[in-house]
Length: 284
Image 1: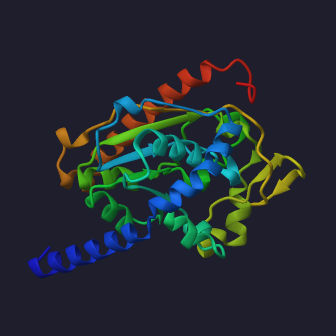
Image 2: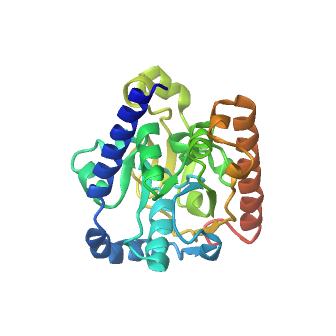
């Protein structure tokens, strides 16, 4: 990249990170935290492994996404993070543009550290020295069927791997169990979503069929009341690919695939272990 282009890129990245940083409001988080703590307590939530984290960012926290429309895994992890490390620490989470685009949602979520998922914004957050939480499986994983509830399924998406390699930040796997027992997903509905053109219009790849309270079987994104399943999250040892690879590795498909396989295998092993601790679904 020529020097002039580098300068423009750096200026744009700096402007973007400043904009994101200005939106996040620790005072707002302190006010909202009691409500989110109450919500997390409903799931008898437990988050382990804070002692394994680096003292400060940047770091990329990668989680398996569970729980359908209500996605309790996000507030469970964040409330524990604020409790352990304080609301002042710059922690951000990537969210789908469709969700942030709902009336009145985007600005409120931005005050809590929500960032619209995209490579430029994600890289700007990490290069600012902050922590970024990503659930790369997105709508594909969050609506995996009941029989696959204890499987890591990122759908082959590797953008977050390239992001980690390009920025050289440590990757912290955040493995959760139980959140996908708060509802019963009967089918992802990927063919229906494609037929409706949701992938083209909204970047949504599913039209799920879900069994939950109080409506019984529902189609699409109609929220259901979550079942009181116990949710456990474990933060694993950071993976530091920068020890072996430089930023150019992000452009090597073989290295990207190798890192993807390493991470998903590590997370699946942890998920198998956490699932084995549970005697019964939902009850935990």
